[in-house]
Length: 332
Image 1 (tube, rainbow, N blue to C red):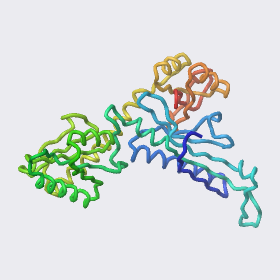
Image 2 (image 1 turned 135 degrees about the horizontal axis):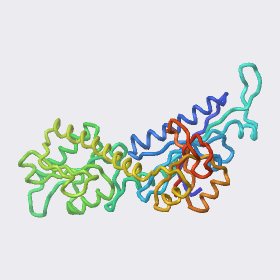
Image 3 (image 1 turned 120 degrees about the vertical axis):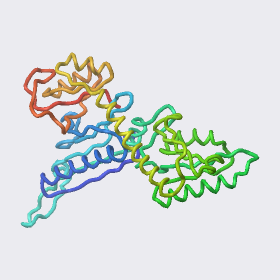
């Protein structure tokens, strides 16, 4: 594998039902993390038999759409059944004193999830980190120049940083004098810090600060005259962090949904895939049919989504009755 860091888990169960329940539970956990923490909307579903992990009864996946519209398999969970237990003689002693083979699950995410977060939210200025997972949620920068009395400005920034940290907001004060404020602005934009607070002499006179959000560039993302009174400041920053989190998710979800197209024929699928988007349609094709689609379009069957229409339809390739829709897309 090219991925060198993994979060991985394995479980053994007495019954097939328990193994299946655990397999789906972990996949749903990955889905929740991607959506609620990483602000990265995903499609959760079941892999086709051909795309499943070798030796597994079934593989479940979360599929994310990157900004170039390619799919990224961001996490997987496998129901291994008793296949590996049979091969490696992994048994347990049941309540009746009989030896039986265990039923297993295996699941994991890797550094490709980190890449997915970068590719979902990043822009030309660098990272845009969701506040819930940003190591630093707020950076405080004093606006000072050589020759001016900087002590009062530094004191004000230290007070603001202390107030936010005491409130549980992960805040960094960059009071170094080696770099200009402009250089610092660019540096922390590159790192994706969600909020930047600027304090200069004029702000001190007003007992206020300037608050800039990373997800909205330029003056449109700035709020001037925000009070540095502790209660008001903490309330403003907390609300803004929530707003940024929601905004990143909403934007990514809208982009994804705009680029998933429902198709009813193979010709439509080829047109959609050629345009770089995801094609969704009813599917009951064989493994050979799947290979044909990949060879002719470079798209793979990403998953059969958990969320399915209430009724079936005609397979987009064969025209035969199909019970489920599948998503096809070019992928990393």
